[in-house]
Length: 452
Image (tube, rainbow, N blue to C red; front, side, top):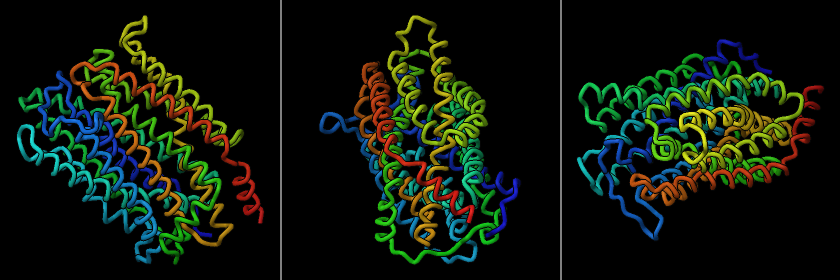
C-alpha cells in the first residue's frame, strides 16, 4: 500500500477544489443573470431575447448545449485519465494542463465583443462556454478520481470529502461576493457590464492560484496506486453502469442536480424580484449559509459513521423539499422580507452540509469496492460518469429554467415561484430513488477487505 497522505497535503489537495468551485460559482450564479438582466441591474442586453417553441430562449439553448458538451466529454476525459501513463501521474497531468485555460475561458464567457444586442455575441458565447466546460472537465474529473486514490480507507475518503466540501463552499462563497466587488468598480465610474467583467477577471486570477496548488504539492506516484487501465471507453462505461449500486445512486444524484441547479440559478431572482432586496444581499446570505453548514460538518461526519451516508442523505432530501416549497412563497409570507431570506438560509444549511460532504465519499467507496471485486482500477470513470450525470441534470435544469424565467426581468413572479416548486418535486423524486441504493453491501465488502 502507498504512503498515507499527510495532513498538509490533504489541505493542498482540498485547495484545488477552492479554485474550480470559485470558477464554477461564477458561471452557475451569474451566467443567466448577466444574459437575462433585470430592469434594476443596469446590464444591457447582449444577446437576442427571443424564444423558440414557446419556451426555449437563446441563453437557454446555449447553456443546454454547453452542459451537453460538458457531459459527453466526462467519460472521454475519464478514460484518457484512467489510461494515462504520464510521468506526472494519471490525474495531476490533466489538472496541470487545464488550469490556465479554465481560468481564461471563465473570463471570456462574459466579454461580449459587440456593444448592444447582437447574434454574434451569442456565437462568441457558445465558443467561450464550450471551452469553459471542456477545461473544467479536464480538471474536475481527474481531481475527484484522485480523491478515491489518495484515501485508502472509507474513513480517509470521508475525511477528504469533508475537506473538499469546506473548500468548495469557500470558493462558492468568494464567488457570491462578486456583486459587492463589481459594486466597487461601479462606484469608480465603470458601467455595470464592465464592472462585472473586471470583478470576474480578478476572481478568475485568484482561482488559478488555487488550481495549481495540488499540481505542484502532491506527488501522485508516491501516494496513489496509479495503475493505468487498459479498458476502452465503451467497455469501461458498460462496466461502470453494470455496478447496480452505482447506477441506482447516480440516477438519484442526477435528479438532485436538476433541483439544486434550478434553485441556485434562481436565487438572485428570489432576492431581487420576490423579496425586493438588493443584489448585494446574495453574498451575505451565501456566507451565512456556509457558516451554518460548517456547524454541521463534524456532526455529519460522525453521524455518517454511525448511521450510514444513505440515511443522512434521505433526511437531507426531505429538508430540501421543505426549503424549496418555502422558496415558492417568498415575499408573501407574513414576516419581514429580509427575515424570510435569513430563515431560508437557516433551513437550507443542514441539507447543504450533507450533500456537500457525502456524495463524493459514496462514489469513492463504490469505486474502491468495484476495484476490489474486478481487479481493475477505474476511479476516473466512476467519477466521470457521476459528473456526466450531474451535468445532464444541470442541462435539463437550465432548459426548464430558461422557459420559466421568461419575462423575469419584467416582473414575471409566477415563473420565478414555479422554479422553487419544480425543485421541490425533483428532490422528492431523488429521495424515492435513493431508497433503492444498498449501502450495506458496499461497506461490508470494504470492511471485509480491510480485515484481509
